[in-house]
Image (cartoon, rainbow, N blue to C red; front, side):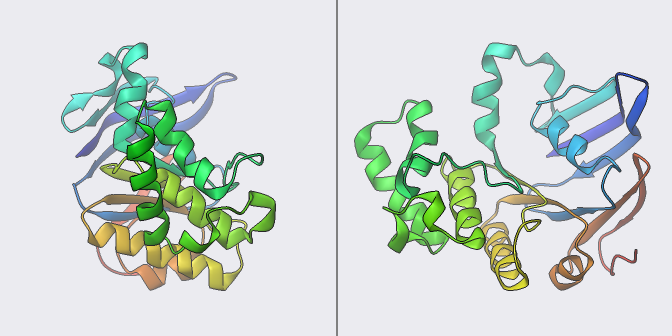
Amino acid sequence: MIKFENVSKIYSGNFVALENIDLVIESGEFVSIVGQSGVGKSTLLKLISAEEQPTEGRVYFNERPLDVIKKKHLPYFRRNIGTVFQDFKLLPQKTVFENVAYALEVAGETNEEIAEKVPEILDIVGMSNKMEKYPHQLSGGEKQKVSLARALVHNPQVILADEPSGNLDPVSTWEIMQLLLKINSLGTTVILATHNKEIVDKIAKRVISMEFGKVARDEVKGKYII
């Protein structure tokens, strides 16, 4: 589904974020990308969503090279990908329902479609009883569940989760991970970027360890050791 072919990413100041990455992620996989801050995890995710372009090499999504997608077509491509962030990125002036609905409004969905889809998604993440609440009335874990609902609302092929537990307590962290595992069990590919060793050990799925912008280890089974 996703393929990195000799990919490097170099930012201004000659900062090498990624170097010679060769990587394949199959449809339906749950992959944890691990490593300390600054090793290239977030850059890797941004290349998958075409938010960034490689300096060298190519990234493919369903065998299609992302660099050939015209800028005006990127919003349509990105509907294949749901993204969950560490800082939630919820709109503070909108309710839980409205935050999730907004993603559908931008895509041109009708009011009838929105009224049907949003409650279904909020029910999946366990937030159907908080639809009229505002972000400031929610706990960190609840905010991340809303963020996850928003990422799921287009029924994406892939979920990119960039340090989704970074601002959460251990109980909320595991709740979010269980939701990601549930979503993965329904067929959605999940790519999790994290430095949380305990979570990676619990998930017990494929682990890609990164160091200094390179893939240091790629284990389908076994535990990540810092």
